[in-house]
Amino acid sequence: MRWSHLAAAGGDPSDRAAPVAPPLPLALPGATVRTFDTPSFAGMAFYEIRAKSIINRVPGASRLPFQWTINPYRGCSHACTYCFARNTHTYLDLDAGHDFDTKIVVKVNAGELVRRELSAPTWRGEPIAMGTNVDVYQRAEGRYRLMPQILAALRDVANPFSILTKGTLILRDLELLKQAAEVTAVGLTFSVGFVDEQVWRAVEPGTPSPRRRLEAVRALTDAGFAVSVLMAPILPGLTDTDESIEQTVAAIAAAGAVSVTPLPLHLRPGAREWYAAWLTREHPELAPRYRELYRRGPYLSQPFQAEIGARVRLAARRHGLHRRDPVETRRVQETESARPSGGPASDALARGDPPRDRRALPASARAQAEQLTLL
Image 1 (cartoon, one colour):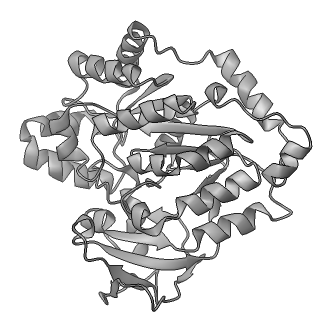
Image 2: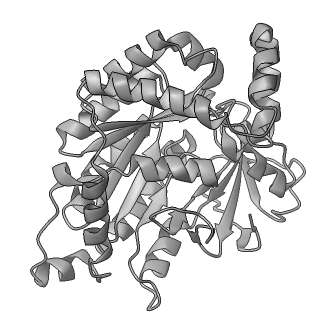
């Protein structure tokens, strides 16, 4: 992860938030650091910076069907104990544990940068994925409102995009999403690994509850979107039982999702240590099993992953959630890749390009799952 494209944010004297002055990370010299006197932001600090670029290329070695991402935030108040992105905070001279949850980097000029980069002559209108590093609809988005600017820019040039989120705040931007879906492909995926509220409170303390997320899936579905669910992570010894899988898949189906994609827990450096500390403290009886399961690296063995996937697929079949046929998926991707890169949405409509039917749009849950695995 490179941070040479970041610069300090300009101060806003009208902002009522009081600047604070803790030691700045080495990678963010001169950033404006703020705290906010509201219960939802208690104990948190926000490092406001002006980024030099915002549309990032996915590493070339990946097998993903998209090459570009947008990440307006670094760090995440969702505080998921297992979050694979934790180690990226160490590149900022911050730790992968508490700092990742409470010290959030905000690219305050994200909206203007997106608009500028989308209009560059070299931009080819390729699909852009969001929410593949940290959640774009985490709590800070309610304060900084970066996503409406980003979505408007994508809409205005009819650029295809996808969003993976746990944040019900996405419903705030429903009208913008509907407008974008009239002129380009919009893929929406929610992450719901389980519906057990006791486990949720323990491992995802800063997120909306699974039930609230599924209510958001229903709202988006009712608005005409084909919403997928990434069933992630499935936690060995905690949420991988037949009962947990059945309850979760049933709830996902009832919410109107078009597909469910399982993703067993993987533990990269940073996340591995933070999750292990939590597990040893809260479930010491499981610690020996985890040491055995992950002794060879961040991933479960292929047979174990395949076994979990098979049980989820069986449950999905029982509840009418069938994954898109591979041939159909390939045809959809080929069709989308052939779309003109285009200019503003109004130009696309003037050319006679038909609006896209939101109900027919792929949600790209598999692509999002692979992104999480490969980053």
